[in-house]
Amino acid sequence: MILKKPKFWDYGKGNLLAYVLLPLTLPIMLNNFFLNLKKSKKNKKIKLICIGNIYIGGTGKTPAVINLFKILKKLNLNVSIGKKFYKSHIDEIDLLKKESNVIVDKSRKKIIQKAEKDKIDCLIFDDGLQDKTVSYDIQFVCFDSKSWIGNGLLIPSGPLREKLNSLKKYDAVFLKNLNDNIDEKINLIRSYNSNIKIFSTNYEIRNLNKFDTSKNYLIFSGIGNPKSFRGLLEKNKFRIIEEIIFPDHFTYSKKNIDFIKKRSKEINAKIITTEKDYIKISKIDHEDIEFLKVETKIDDEINFLNFIKSKIYD
Image 1 (cartoon, one colour):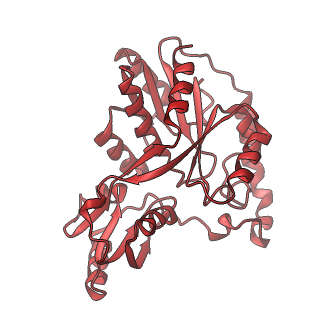
Image 2 (tube, one colour):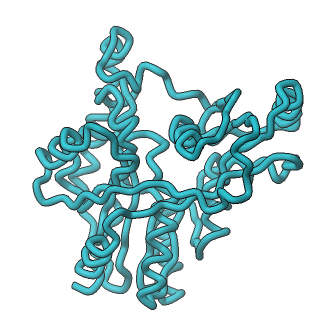
Image 3 (tube, rainbow, N blue to C red):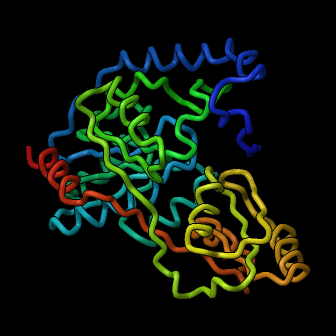
């Protein structure tokens, strides 16, 4: 069963329910402890890169993976994306297939083996920071600065897979949607790892000219961070008069789509969703529904490219 993320996870601090659940974070802490004891050997044939998160969902991970794939292709490298198969993540797999070369398997080790046979130079994993059976050459952690670290607590008290001190193990951070508390967030990251690289990113709408922003819009999504989707639309002056939010990786039915369309007619609004959601509903009914095509933009691309080259060609 796919559930919506609890609202109290994203409070700025813990509340009573979060503290009541604290004893249940112990299994996560123990699991992380034993995982960190595992050692894996570096792969000498392929450079392995992982873009993941320690905050559950909605950090811009998949668009960042696609962007890095395109950057590495420009360096004339043979690149593929590795994606571990989960039935609930078919939407992400289909999106990656539209934009890149993807190797999918239920095991990351098997993905690497397939990449070796294909003589891949660089393999970018979409997710997998917590998989200690793989020794990555570069590890990126993604954050959305608006949701940031939520209440700062581990699952199930909060949205974190690992404590913030895990940042000392990683090489770089993608920080999306930088806001007014930039220095506070950067200082907190650097307090755990003074050498970590921090790259600010933003979403850019690639098909904006397709829309008439003077019209009324109903929006819907089933993603990890629907606030980010709505915020991007509002930033570009869309008139949103209603929003329908489904759980992350939601499996749509014809009944869901019929309801959305019926509601849009009742309020005389056009319908927009995310590209990931559009891919899923395309198998059911996407007539009169548009999607927002977004791309991750790195603010300091020159510095980022130099960092990547230093790791790839070392």
